[in-house]
Image (cartoon, rainbow, N blue to C red; front, side, top):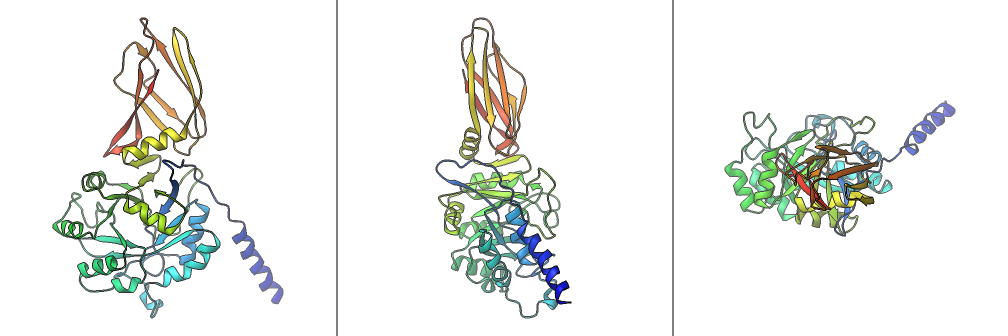
Length: 356
């Protein structure tokens, strides 16, 4: 029997040590590190289906730098099986594993109320239990008293907003009181253009998170929804500073969503110009996409004497050649594109040009 138990433990250990990390290739920009983060997920300590350490394992294998386990404060369907469990317990359980795997673990909770104001996450808490109070405004104030970063979750969730994505007076109250610093522009697979617009207008931080409840598995070539945080260093404190300063881009499928200045830097740092060739008849540029993000280029208004294809796809980690024919004696100009999967505005791509 002892040999059987030892053999079983060895199998478990082998599985643990066999974990392989998938490094996500997104360039650092503007002197900041591009940290891959997910700030919204659940465990059995609310309505999730996994133990807190599983969230750490997923983060490690899927290439994240930081996570926040944000179990619901007010909704705990497994409460009968977690007698006396503190709202801090998920963080405490995951902490040792996170340190061992070099995952930055941020203490957080989800303030879970009906609309309005709906659900919000509070990050960088010291004591999650302090948010367990009857009035929603008191919960937000308790989070703020701990210097938390607070953001509105899934504003377009049809369970709370079945007809349209609306901004309520309660959100104005929270925003005016400094109790809302960001909004989930993406939740899981759902993109909310209205939320991106609000972030742009109100100078709020854009976030994208999984809000995962079940075990999170990915197919080959997939990545989870995440927030790219451009931080001065790889620490919890630097992440908090970057969130407050709105240095984020949301990464959903093959889309990047964020402010124009960050999207442009990501593109320019990802694309390496390998060679240029110019004759009287054509201009040819060879580029290499060093990132995991494909870039979908669509031709926009331009000098008609510069003749080039309507669409190009710059696949990840591949070389590409763009050839521009020079007609009617033209010797130069701008080759203009919109990158349709880099959303600097709601449902609008990022405009770029290559000067000749």
